[in-house]
Length: 257
Image (tube, rainbow, N blue to C red; front, side):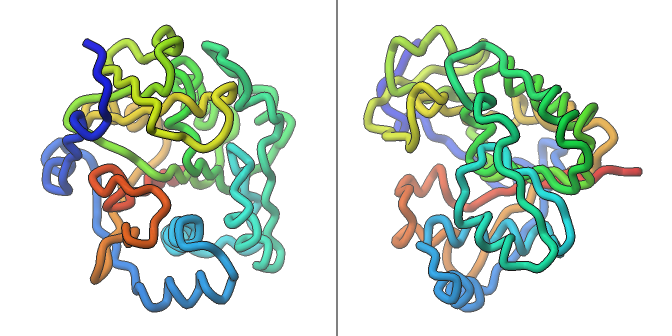
């Protein structure tokens, strides 16, 4: 069945439901005052700044690390990282990795060409990859790039899997097991020719099957961000669907060897 409203299909899972599904999850508490001061001192807007602050406080010390930003458009993230001496941020190794409505985008050669990578960061990226690309990307990160740490944010999990499409002509790109919602009001940022008319929300089962089960050789943790108020504070956040964006969840996976 094809639906026409995201909000009528949003049944986000709770922390307890995630834990009950045998997914390793923990709560991390953010000092809102420190976060807001950091955002202000760096001159960032709240929407980009709060996500960047949460990512950096989650992954820890990034000094003297080589970081690959898959997506390559997070100027706030780059600025914050590059203010830390000795840190190198590489944007998308090949801009075509996000281009076109291809069933499969190949990262293998780009990863081989880059050589050593300490951290691979995916910010608002992987949920816009089409199905074959998403599955292959995780395998190629683990088998070829082999970073010390993988960080993916945000992680959206619903009680059943959803594909959000801005245009009915994109139905052919939908995941095999997802409910389809066609909603032109979603207003994804970026060009539709770069998958930005497509978005994925996992269920607990599809998250385990497609992400966690492919992180072989890595120890993962799903981190749920909290503070005295919601993180993010939806009154200051660009993306207004509270059910979808609160709480912010970040997946980290550390290489075991």
